[in-house]
Amino acid sequence: MDVPDVAIAGLGMTEMGKVHDRSAAQFGVDAIRLAAADAGMPVAEIDGLLVNPGISGGIDLGIQRALGLRDLGFAAQVQAYGSSAGAMVAQASLAIAAGMATAVACVFADAPLKPQASTGAAYADPARRVRPGFAGLAAAGGALGPNAGYALAARRHMDTYGTTSEQLGAIAVSTREWARLNPLAQMRDPITVADHQNSRWIVEPLHLLDCCLVSNGGVAVLVTAGPKARDLRRPAVHVHGWGQGHPGRTDRAGSDFGLVTGAARSGRAAMRMAGVRPEQIGVREIYDCYTYTTLVTLEDYGFCAKGEGGALVADGALGPGGALPTNTGGGQLSGYYMWGMTPLSEAIVQARGQAGPRQVERNDLVLVSGNGGVLDHHSTLVLSPAPRT
Image 1 (spheres, rainbow, N blue to C red):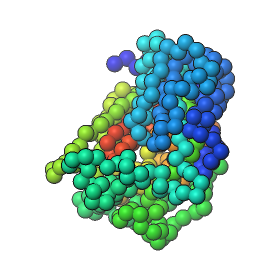
Image 2 (cartoon, helix red, strand yellow):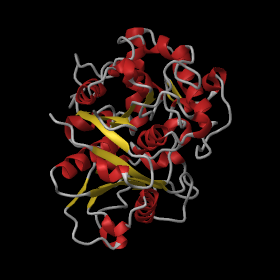
Image 3 (spheres, helix red, strand yellow):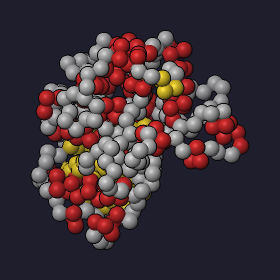
């Protein structure tokens, strides 16, 4: 297909973390206003709106009224979980190419953290996860929430390929090293593989330091036509390719659960559209809800052969100064947890060349991944500071 000339012109990020004084809807409104200001565009010029409501569902299309937007030509609520950010950018790009809108705001906002409640409580509501019939067997056996599902996936990868917990620990360490260079990151104290190994179990084989943060906040991006973006305040970040993958597994014997994810399909599609190969990518912003997710996604994208992810990450290749700079803002493990907006926001900063001490020199092609459910949904974007030729 002919790839439309579209670009991300604005990025808005609210305060994130244990912030309890605003609702999800307020975070969303603030993030869109910040994105418009970042682009140097009046909010009133936004004529498209895509909303991802997060886990708590506290934001919806009602924010149109809160923003005072009139006569939108394109609007929808998108819920593909952690893959929603990439899906929204792709949908916005298509809407702009079709003439349905000229400036589309894509926003994620959520406020699952509550005062005096554990961070894990936000994703551990059994009523939301128990399903009738055979689909509820896992929950009936005590496998509630995503931790158990990702633990099973990680264990299968370990048993099949010999991947070790120490190799997962190396991912946690490299991600924290990047976070130490990011003033917005929530976790900036240095850690070692020994710290990782000594952190408490969440669900074996996943330690505490294998698992992402939970954050309140909002992030929005403003997508518009490339020529318009190039005339606005910030350097345009051009969308060269996108793809999605939704395996639809049934958890039956013989499936490749834990070994191959939707990243294999979505990555191929996005890179094919962009006309690039994995070795041409300078920066990787990977959805890292768990260290294991980083590893298996890198394999599925073709940065190493299947089963070789453990060896790839063990020597610090992903960290500052490494051969494969990955999750350069600290990711979701150490930076902030805004679902797919975490990798997307850092990708924009890197593509603009505005990352300060963590800036990667070769930023001409930036790969962004999103992952939702327990490896159920995947999205991929290829971004660049230059228009596609």
